[in-house]
Length: 447
Image 1 (cartoon, helix red, strand yellow):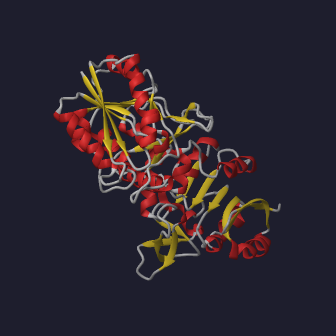
Image 2: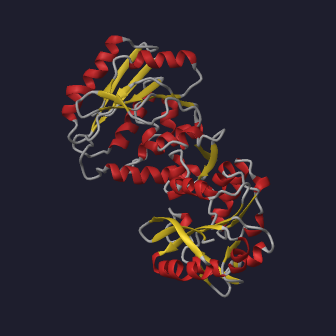
Image 3: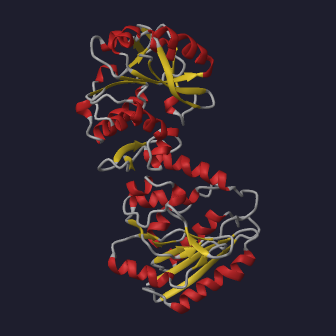
């Protein structure tokens, strides 16, 4: 078999190629060629920045295909191949000959020039869903052994200034047999980006790649796993890694975990009935079911986009039998009304607010009307500015059942809640968490 090592050399990278990159390929060849009879280093010059790295990689792919190379390996000029790279790949291929592309571990030079593995990365990735459940910077880098036909089928997008690497990876993982394995094929030298008119920063790369990641998540159901010490992990659907709550799920945690722990200490009633106004995608609903052993949960959520994920998360965690769905598709307020949902920031679905509209597609009900005579032990209110309306619409329920209340209050409403509503309802604030524009209060009856 034949392998071509492909290295585009952009502006400012000639010395890196000569001093470290090219010698590292020679050392790897001298150590062990692995499964290959022939290995050639295809160095593609672009030191004047006339072509662009994608065009140079594509030119090399065309050459490798024309000359009958079976595999290619991409090595940037600022990176270094490990001495046993070919031998390590041979071990993988011998045990998994069906693979079309193999990535190794992400390894970088630290400030002292020593190689170190990137913390938090998975050692193995076996499926497209596994890949998409991992933040890109922890999943793959450019150095991979790829069958030439597969690589040439897609190539690199020359119109992209940055992020073209992950567009290429995502195409491969969607159409070929790919894997990441616990081997080290190369060491990345950070902070040595090529310069030129189409240069890009790390922030530019992150923005471009996150957009690609989000597009992929619309095609493949991906679930974050949250191990919270309560049996098997919780599963939460990921559709937008930029979303504030979903980003927390990707880190393996529930959103607002510290406040949820406060709740666990304050809510002393066994098998409580819970009303969740502003259930969003179900972060709190799933946590309640796993940690509070509730008799019933009444989620109230009007936003259609959030409802889809809420239902999926309820189903994925097997908690449907605890859910009363009468509030799904509705908002909570003083009484009946019509509203439209407004999401000012697509990456913060939980901040969706309701705006009054005579012909709005979303209806509101008071909690008094919605719950009727059903007993309530705990109410969580996250109504994005309508929190005082929700309280007014739950006056009878609160007077009757005296539930613990966790409420997000916009700062302009703080005095109305603490000095006004609490005194009138005979409640007291027992804990709080301040944020930039809001304060979360825990309040309980004075008696």
